[in-house]
Amino acid sequence: MERKLDKLKIVDRDVIKYIVIVFMGLGHFLAWLCGTGNPNAAYFLPVPYQILIDLALIAPPTMFFFISEGFRYTRSREGYAKRLFIFACITQIPEYMLWVEKPIEITDFIGLSTMNVFFSLFCCLIALMIYESERPKKQKILLMILLTVASLLTIWGFFCICYVLIWHIWRDDLKKRTIIYTAFTVFYNSISFISALLSHSETRPYEILGAVTRFTAMMLAYVLITFFYNGKKGKHPVFSKWFFYIFYPAHVLVIALLKWFWL
Image (cartoon, rainbow, N blue to C red; front, side, top):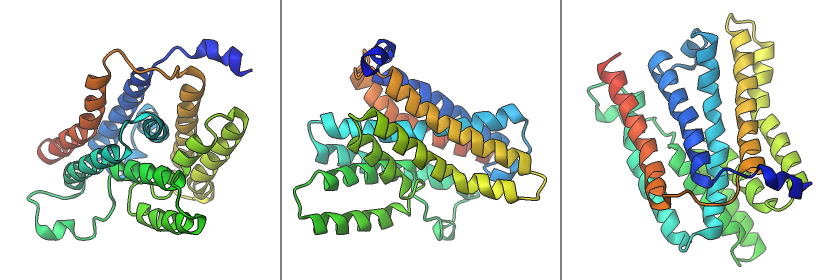
């Protein structure tokens, strides 16, 4: 079965990343500029816009996968962790700008505790470092619990750790990985889907559509990586590496500035 699937593996790492950041960037621009960053406002956008916004969720599971790849192949895991943490700190500035009104006052930052996706990725890498460490089992469990609690401050919460562990632990077991990933993705989207079904608001159909689209996007990420990724770097790995690091904070900054001075 897996040998037959190898014929489909024609897409390298960088192409996959470019594909998902197009969906992510477009979804973010639509959500923040057309939907004004308000989830309820987005429900009143045209349906194609809503679908594009929710399809942005093809990006996070893909990012978590490449953290597991980076953990496996990087020359320095400590250096990788430092790089993620530095960009997480940099990204937090434009991330805050999305949520505050201008001019910024120090009180605007109080209560804005959600940390950006780079902090989620940083937690993913630390989780893998703990998992693969030679520490005693009880110590590893304690550290993983503490990390999980810390991850709740990030935009993806404990889900980022779960996803990266799924990618890492069942990397070479297609059947188990597919079942566990699918089940966990159903669980992730079930709360919003069930609440949408029970809702009596005028946005109910759009909430249901959103839950289904987000599930579809996350499964598309799995299909893209599992069946089409050939495990190779792109033609310009150094450029692509820094482009992906810079793109996220840059596009958030652009959206924040447009939100401030255009809307």
